[in-house]
Image (cartoon, rainbow, N blue to C red; front, side):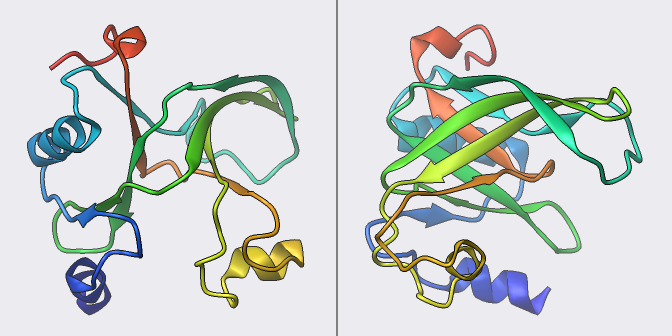
Length: 161
């Protein structure tokens, strides 16, 4: 809990804005105000079966959301629901359809960060990829309990508040 409080009280990364909503209503308010529209879509990774074992997956489809701006909300450990939300710069979101070796369907969300020059050089992404900040985009899957918000009328059928 102390880590969550520190994270929420820390200043935003350079060029970003951040918030720590404690309810879905508050998160929706932040999404609509920060994205500048009442037409927003919330996306999360969904695994077709509970308790799915670690396994290889086959990618069957990839779609770019097409949104220029994203609000990304990370679930934080706390006594009640707390999310750390931020507007990352130069980031794109994608939806991925995958099928596991055991037939489990997964609809995943991935994000790709194009500007990483200002990131900490010791960030785990650079260690895993064996690259330096600012040299390549860094892409990763979004965990199940996190939410990526996008804007645009094309998404109005998902959540139109």
